[in-house]
Length: 156
Image 1 (cartoon, rainbow, N blue to C red):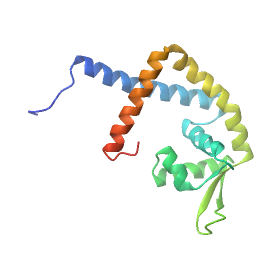
Image 2: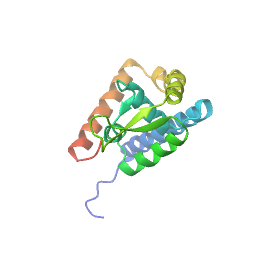
Image 3: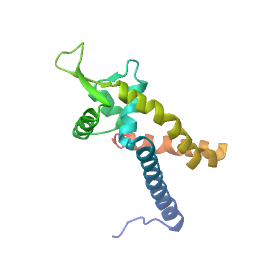
C-alpha cells in the first residue's frame, strides 16, 4: 500500500458527496418517471433520443452510442420496450440486413406526456436550487471529467 495517495478529508467529502448526489438524483428521477408515467429512466432516455431523431428512427448502433450502452443491454431493453408497444424494430431501408428502431405512436405520446413533468422534476430538485455561477461550475466540472474519461479511452 506504499505510494497510495489516499483521499484527504476534503477530497473524500467531495467524492462521496458526488456519488451520493448521483445515486439520489437517479433514484428520484426513476421513481418520479415510474410513478407518473410508468417509464423507467432507461425507457425515458431511449424515447428521448428517438423523439429527437428527425423521423423518430435510429439505427441500433447510433442509439447505443448515444446512450453509452453495450449492444446486449440495448437489445434486451429494446425487446422489453417493444413488448410494451413503445418502440418497434424495422428493416433499414438503405441496408436490408440492418435494422432501425422506431418510436411508436404510444411511445411518442408517453414521451410527450413525460417530458414536461421530468423537466419540472429536474428543475425542482437541482436547477432552480443553484445559482448561475454554480450551474456554470457544475457544467464545467462535467465537461472536464468527460474529457478526462475520453482521454483514458472510456465511453463518456
